[in-house]
Length: 134
Image 1 (cartoon, rainbow, N blue to C red):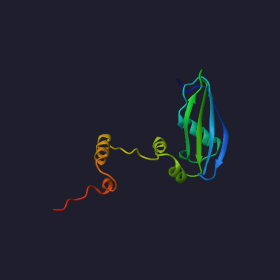
Image 2 (cartoon, rainbow, N blue to C red):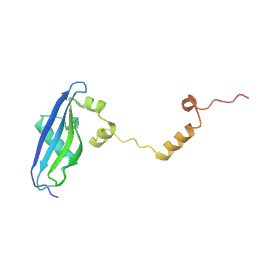
Image 3 (tube, rainbow, N blue to C red):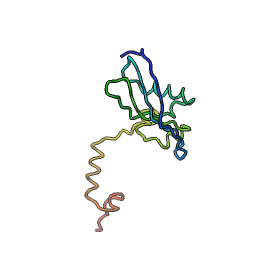
């Protein structure tokens, strides 16, 4: 689509959540002569707006385009510090931001293990089956 065109970011329903140590708000984006705006660009603009030093403390998600284009609505969170973000944000969002790695598990092995555990009841699932006496 190209990099030309203007982007206007407005926030609404702003609130500070002291319990989770973050600012949360709805983001309204209006843009002209452009396709979908990358989240990294939105995070950079929000960091500039709210005077945030570390862009990794900003999480944006849930964007929906309005029919006809030109307007996008989503949700944004700005954490007080990086430790708070890592503690509270879901793992999949941390992976998107590059702050965590994706757990690489073999699906077939997980399913086989689940089906083997179905045969046992209670603590046998954790400890394994009881040994038979001879």
